[in-house]
Structure formats: structure tokens, C-alpha cells
Length: 244
Length: 244
DNA sequence: CGACTGCTTGAACGACCTCAATGAGCGTGG
DNA sequence: CCACGCTCATTGAGGTCGTTCAAGCAGTCG
Figure (cartoon, rainbow over the protein chains, first blue to last red):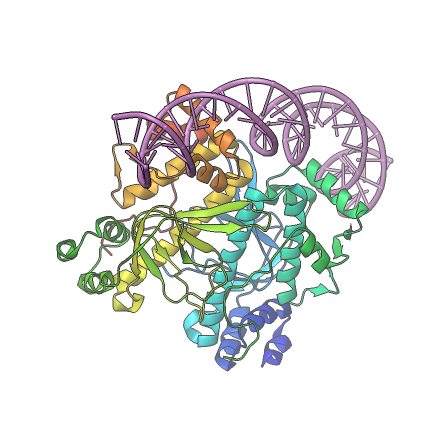
């Protein structure tokens, strides 16, 4: 059933992620196909959603990276989370929801309207899981910022990205495309780009990773996870990809 | 309609908060009254929910303070958020949800089962708003930890607590009961208790606040908000307490 | 080739931490 | 009613992690 969508376009990664969360049924696939008709490209640095504005509709990220971000009056910037293919932005059940953060494209991004959750129970469940995951990663981020040192923060973020990209099939071996600058990483981790640079070089010297031309390779993710004591995120007692 | 519940017990603050989020209809009030029958006390330091365990049912905090918390292997501790009367824990739409953090009581706490959301549309909307607020405060916390300095973090947290307690009617003038130790504040803000102490004394010297015997008074909240450039949180285009 | 953006490196500084000791407040038991 | 023990607040001295400022270098794009 995924095939039908593939034929239409290549939303591969996004659909793959949703399908990993919950095996999608036919209704979900049809709804997704419809939604794909609304696909539109967003240029890097462009806003997808502005903080304080009313959310028109939830969006599904088809390709590219985006981020939720807050700007302080004096120019300081904080990335709240990174949004990857298959992530859904603007989920929420309240009436007339307002965006609590700006969402900007970090790379060329393709988004479409997220198919309405009432089209299929599988879709509703996928959204519920997606939102729960989103929240879990926010909690992880809080711990990271509050109690980890610079090196732990960076390692932890890289492991999180690997874990998330894996769900969308966007990782190969232990490497993935990382379209972030060191300054963006700094703004996500509460550090300066100078210090991020120094810590990454430390990782390199210690043989933990390779990073060049936009591709990051973790030498041994599980060893790294042990080194910085990281637990993978879990939000449901049912493992992903299990039939329900 | 609130009166009926008051007669039964004093869930005052919690009901007041929900009613502030959305004016509760009769069904919601009835459901709440039923839920109050399940009220139970929790001693300080006791776990309400354990990280990684399946969530049995969402809980409504009736009185007292609790917190979501993560412990690292080496003993470091991070408070993710504080839970106040009227807050609901464990909301989520996925099947068999798993707790992504431990929830512990900081003071004597009274909780009850949260009335099921399908009992009343008002209740469902209140939960949706509650969850959105919860998420918004997580985002605020991330910005706090990532980009504010020690003094800004503390001021920002105090303003947030005032803002939230106000919704439950638990503030008088610009003061409220603050049952936290400086060490807890430190563990929420990614600081040490020593440094929190020094910054609070700085606030005192600057005349921004008074804090003794468990009660915090902010001299001039809006001046403080301006000083550290804080914006109140908003998650819906509809102002709280508005009939829908 | 120039202009730009992002990475790299050095030196000095400072915000916050660590360690350690003292004091204040409070409940408990004798 | 006092002594004891406990938790929490306070204060000092010294150390460190991460920042700030500044400059040089490499890759990329028009």
C-alpha cells in the first residue's frame, strides 16, 4: 500500500516514519496520497509558522530539516527542537491553537498539509505517538541543557538524531546527512559555536566520529551511548512497527 | 455549578484552574465530582508515576506541588517541570502510553483520577489546553536553560510560577507559597544551590523580591518581566475564561 | 577572482562550580 | 523545656568550563 504513494512522488522518508510508528492501513494511505497533492517547497531560512500566530493546519514534513526556534530581544537564539522528515508540526486538540514557537526551514524543505486524523485510526494513533515522541525529546533536551556538559550534550544530540533519522530510513550504517552548521548546534545546545568546534575536535581525536561535507558518521553509537550514559526514548508499551 | 463540588470537599484550586481554562459545563462538573471520590494523599518524596512504567490513568493534581524529574546514573538530577494544583499528568492519546519521566511529590499532594475526557466537550477542551500549556512551558524551560543566565533563569521561573498559580487562584497580591528548596530550584534551572542562593540575594539587594518562611513576594512582577524580557505564554487565540 | 559563509585556533576573561565551614530553623525525644 | 539531629540557607576561597574577542583559513558560489 505504500507503493501507491511512491508511484505518485517520493515522500519516502516521511511515509516511512509514520509507517514505522504504526502500520498504516488503506484509509491512511489514501489520505496521505490526497495530502501529498498539497506539497509545497520552502526555501531555507523561511518561516513555516510564526510564533504567536494562529496555526492554520498541521503540517507534515516530507523532506529537509526545519527547526522550532525562539529569538530573544537581544539577538540570542535558541533552537527548541529539530524537525525531520515524517515529523508533524502543529498537532494539538484545542480550538484555535496558537504557535508557541517559530518554525523555520534549515534546508530546502517540502511540506504538505497533514492528513486529518479522523481519516483513519492508524493515522490518529501515529499522530498521538508522534506527539508523545516530540514531547519526550523535549524532556530529553531539558535534561541535556540542564545537567550535561558540553561534550555530553553534543554526543547526546547526535545519538538522538541518529535514532530519529533511523525511523525514517534516513541513516545508512551509522552515518547520516547532517545539514547543520556548528553555530546551529550551538544554538540548540546552549553553547557557543567556538566551543562546539572544540568539543567536536575532541570527539574526532578520541575516534568517536567523522564529520565532513555534511555527513556525520558515529564510529560506534552504542559505545558512545554508554560513554555518555544515554537511554533511547520510549513512549508506548507497544514497540514500533508492531501490528495492533 | 462549582458550588456543588465545593460542598463535597475543597478541590478549590484544581477546579478553579480547569474552569479558568474553559468554563466547565454541567457534565464536566458531574464528572469531576465523581473523580473526586478517588482522591488520595501522597506523601512528599513519593513517586506518583515511575519513568518507563505504563501509565494506568491520567491524574489530576488537587493540592500540593509535584514535579517531573529525571535522574542520571551519577546522581545528577533534573527537574523537567513543576506540577501545580489543576495540572493533569499523563494526558496522551496513544495506546498503552509509557511515562517519559518520573513524577514525584514535593509536598504532601492530593491527586484523583482525571475524569475521562469524553464526559464533556468542555473537559476535553480543558485537557487540550492544559496539554498545550504544558508543552509551551517546556519550550520556555528549554529557552531558559539554553540561553538565559542564572539571574534571568530564576526571575523567569518565578514569573512563570506566579502566572500559573494565578490561574488556580493560589496567588494573593504578588506573592505565593513557594515550597521549594534552593536545591530544587537549582535542579530545575541547571545551576547549583550555592549559586541560586547568591543570585536570590542579589535579587533581594536589588529590591526585586522577598522570600521567607515559604512565601515568595515579587515586588513588581511586570517590572521584573521587563527587566529579564519575559513574555507570558499563550497557546490559543481564545483568551482564557471566554465562553465558547 | 572576490565575497561570503563556516571552520579553526589562540589568549584572556568570567560566570558558575566545588569544597568546606558556619549558622538558622524546626521537629523529636528525654 | 532543653538538647540533639536534621535539613536548609549562607558565606568564603579557589578552580574550571565555557565564553569572548580576534584573526586566519578553506570551501563555495556567482
